[in-house]
Amino acid sequence: MSSAGAWEKEEEREGESKKERDLQWYVEVPVPSPKKDEVLLKVEALNPAERHIQKGMLRPLLPRRFPFIPGGLAEFAVSSVRLTVKRPTEISASHAAGLNIAGLTALQALTEVAGVKLDGSGNTRNILITAASGGVGHYAVQLAKLVMDYKTPEGAALRSPSGRKYDAVIHCASATPWSIFEPNLSEYGQVIELSPNASAMWTSAVKRLTLSKKKLVPLLMKPKGENLELLVRLVKEGKLKTVVDSTSTLSNAKEAWNKIMDGHATGKIIVEP
Image (cartoon, rainbow, N blue to C red; front, side, top):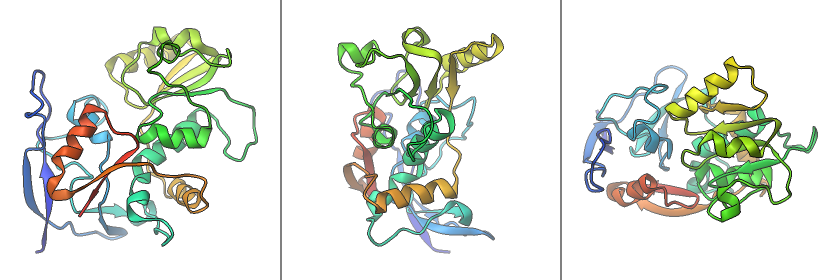
């Protein structure tokens, strides 16, 4: 059986030093064997969601046994054929690789939850996107065309430059109290939380139970082949672009991993063989 390189990681624990948060083992693992209706993939991008898994933020929704191999830190993986899209020759592997999680999350947050119509039809929506330079954020900005710098005083208070209340907030940044969002939302405004913690889940449940007009909606991206087809087409047409923060080799992925863990990436970090 052939083998390939991969990194393994333990769960992050409170009080760990930066060194202890590092990837811990570079190991040789068997190349996975695709089953019926599956395909073997060569992986070339880090998945920022693994940061939330390691920190335990998604434990209630996505339990994970440790140590584990982060999805973007192995040379090969398997996927259902229906969830894969052929990469056009006009799109480089590194630019296509960033679409799978971040691009799909941005698309689904905007179109399936916030109600944005990419063809321009439907009612005009006032959308705020936090952490707009990050992996999900930079795709969402290109799709929604509205952004605020949440590091400025106005941005920290989530005040709209136009003075209008927000119909939806695509929240890609770290946890922000509901009390900051609520006064800036329109009558039926909603916060789409991409990294829901326990507090966010509680707030979401309370808003549902009290039939609140304003809502907090936790979002876990659901892989859909048709969504990926759309994103690839938009990239091919020059309407969507992957911003590559940096690249790293798989054998030297610690630096890339630490950059993701610290939340300092602008766009996508790509790991190449």
